Length: 328
Image 1 (cartoon, one colour):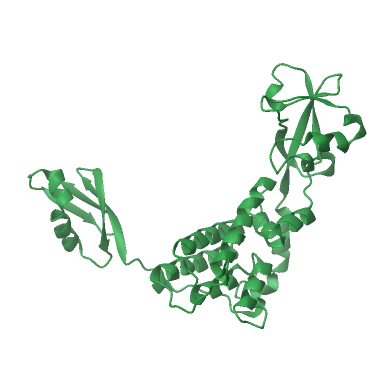
Image 2: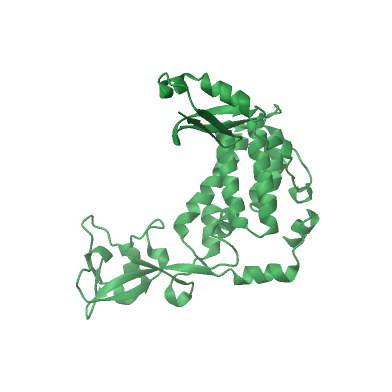
């Protein structure tokens, strides 16, 4: 990882990088069942009310589909003393456990086996999710339910390159909107790598993929640098995509993308149009349009005439790239 960053102009030293990793403590999400004092009867969380119960840590692997619902059959088989347990359930017939954020520990039965996550969702999903949890130097709770978000992101990324019928990357020239989405992401990710803000990089990747999906982007000029950009965060899927893009050498040796400001320039700006300080509608004007030209266009707008109701305005205030206010 450090070599990857160094080869691309980002050069954190080995020791501070290790220190950040060591400080990034991931907390566990514990689960509890509630046993009536002196019995082997367990009360669902919503049925406790004024009953005297003892909370007991339960292995989180006994919950159904990463939810708060206990799998009763698994619970009975978990330990011999629970084989003949009885349950007071919710009205819908479920046993709902209590949840609490605690330090991940075997004694609290809240340890998540990364091998299980990799087997079910893939190593890239686990890697992305750990980055997405929050800043490396801050403690954050692990919640397996959140894994689905990064898993779905990777699937959506894959669908930019592949459809149900196969490979769909084209050699067509990308649109200005596609280039803007890509270069906005390149700029953000490069800034985040410098400050180890990997969680915000993952967020930006999600935004970018959503934008490219909406634009129906399957253009090599966009998707090739995107694969390189994603590589440090999801190396396995990036390597696979790189191979399908026709490259024989590993994506690790590809030059890391840098953004071009020309693709980030706004061609137009949407102005809120206010009348005596109250916004009534919005209009978009080219960014190179002068204040005098914008004023003329606003006064000729039918909605302006409707707001003024035949009265002549006293003043039109145009703040470039911000707001238009008509004073009557």
